Length: 159
Image (cartoon, rainbow, N blue to C red; front, side):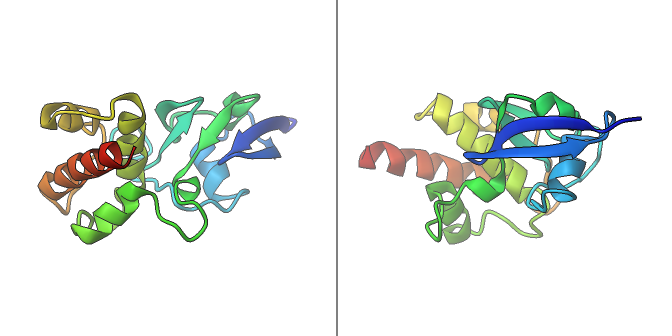
């Protein structure tokens, strides 16, 4: 079967690639493109470790065909920092030790960023609801939720 040509934007950069019709976006990101920040935790869309945004919509890249990226804009964890400057969520996760093994962290950060872009003043319940699709086996989620809430407050103050 012939490979498909796809033109897209990833982390603000125009990209073109060839992919198999059955190839997932996660496999393409981690393989051909070398963007290994998104992790494969389950391969079935249940854990959120591979979360990216597709035209500002949070999606599991393991459930998306790479060919579906045609004409779309994708954001991955690699595009979250601006050069050496971490995104406020990344900085707060470090400060508050809101991560452990790191498998879930990229997906949680992408999901949290997506939430704060939609709702800069979420309640604790809203944060927990929004992050419910991201499973972590190492933490009890409290540090993660507190880090998101503190980041939201600091971002509102600096705006």
